[in-house]
Image (tube, rainbow, N blue to C red):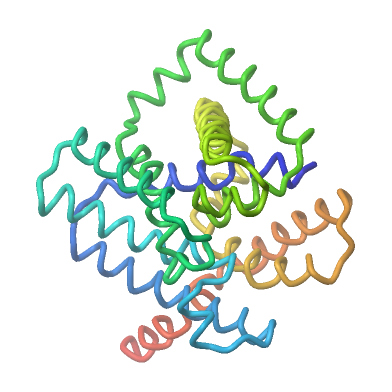
Length: 292
């Protein structure tokens, strides 16, 4: 149940926020961020490969379920820079291009496992959400927060959507949010027609957007979340390397899920001050040598 509720919105929300905080189109800054993210991606993938006894090259080519987002984030930022900074495309043109490209990938008659070299399928499918985050301004957020009828509509719809997601099987959610499978792949796995697959995809996308907007309307978060928000990469690292392994070893139940969530938070808070040493060990060592 908890799994279904989280999968209904967690990736759309995360990607929209990533786009919102990627408004700077300074190529030097993008390159620096990309190098650090690429280092984190390689370190995480190697550790996960060792834990699961997978070969190094295949796991780097086909990112593990915990690492694909890092690689896609690098691609999104360069795609956005090329469209906005190099090609000088208008927002309308970018919207049209990104949606058409995502739809064309949906029509490819292959399953996602053949389209996930370097996370290509998910990168293309999620780029419109990343660009949506880029287009959102503080004014838009304040409008949502200040209009009571908008907040009521968003909260009400979100509650109904979460209840529906929890009542239905989470398997479809997992395939859509994790793999972003093609219509052919969805039809092959679930026995749906292409029209049914497209309707399901449109529905869960609408659910993710609605819940994401509802969460953006929250005016104040507890100070705890704000203080540790800048350490989100270390929490992501822990979840990807440790929790993902533990879920395979422990029984699937609601209490276990809560314990794992608490475990991630506690460990993340404890080692947050060591974030660069863990997520970017090579950069940290080189920086230490330069200072010395």
